[in-house]
Image (cartoon, rainbow, N blue to C red):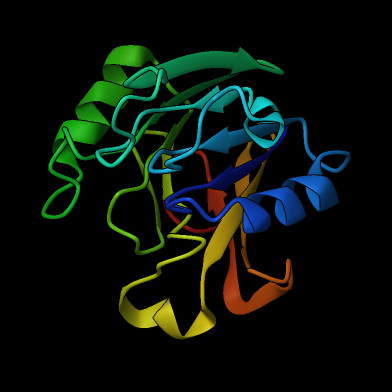
Length: 178
């Protein structure tokens, strides 16, 4: 299974159109982790099988969280603002365990992050439009995750869909980098 994960475009429709157009035939699933600030009825948002409500998505009809199964992989997505992701991943990890997730996707912090905990890949694609932290200089990021029975392969891309040097990860599903 191969999934594109994006978050926090904050109304930037053009970047979502560009990324989804380029990747829609290359991935099995597209996930938006919230703060889109765009109606779910827009054609570009219809490309996301999973899209959740962010703390800036006032009046929009997205679920707070979603769990889907694709190609045998159980994926849990939330924005993260209700799980204290600015300070700890523990509540999010516990929610992922409760959901039986293989993959836990979140946004909110505008900073990319990826780890494996308790056999789950927990990933933040960063913000595609308003990045913060160490990788803010890139101007925005999204992630593509490929799963195999034994591993998670994660690649981060910039706004031009170019792979980011040093942000390719292979994780053993049992924990740690392969």
